[in-house]
Image (tube, rainbow, N blue to C red; front, top):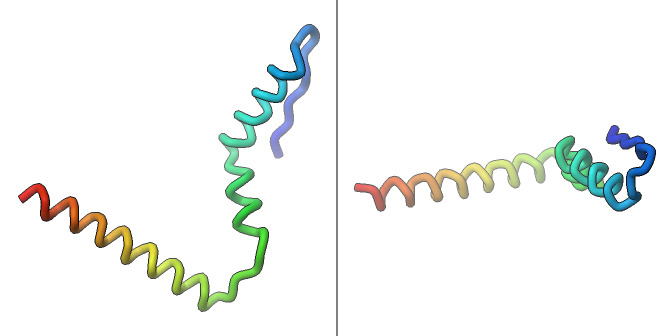
Length: 67
């Protein structure tokens, strides 16, 4: 959990900037989005396989252009 303590003499804008950076580093937003809705196991598997195919196509496309 991200936590920022406002230091004496520090502006609220600076503290907010530090908080945003900390949240981004800890991938809290990504985790919240992942848990925002339920996905069936089969649906997860299909999406995972589709991403793997996409990565493979991208990898092969770069490989062919080098030759």
